[in-house]
Length: 217
Image (tube, rainbow, N blue to C red; front, side, top):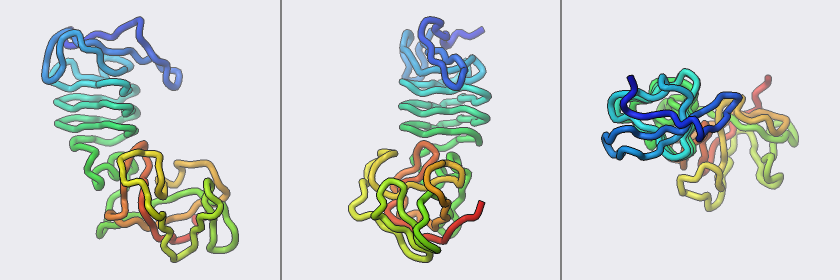
């Protein structure tokens, strides 16, 4: 029997046709006080009824995802699919997790890349993708600024990018190959770890990247 929290039937959200219920603590534990309202979950299987695991604020957990141990999910984070968040993991901000076993904080760039995009750094570099509009062979323009140009085998660099943890701000945005639908062309880019500003919402914002070239689909 769940003595830890209850699902509020009169405070719900519908996401992808699934009803999520806000949770309310029935006891005090960890940093949670009896009566505190948490985030939204689909069912008890999504949040362990023992331990100090908790979902805060406007965070969502649904599907076959599970949060357990001493893990915390907060902010506007979304955890679903087959994601497993455990141990002392912290999932926060605008992070979106679809799969994988998350046991470490997502403020670690290398771990965030693996958890959110399934990408590993090799020699402090990785390959990511973005959609652009093709101008000519080996030359492309940004979907959002036609004057920002990408060219094969050249560095694309943003002057004075926003170095904050904002997900959507100035910088070059890259992700997995199928993340965006804009533009008429997909290009692959090499990214150095030191050029990554933030990893959130399943995408990466960087100061600069090297264009490898067009990816034929």
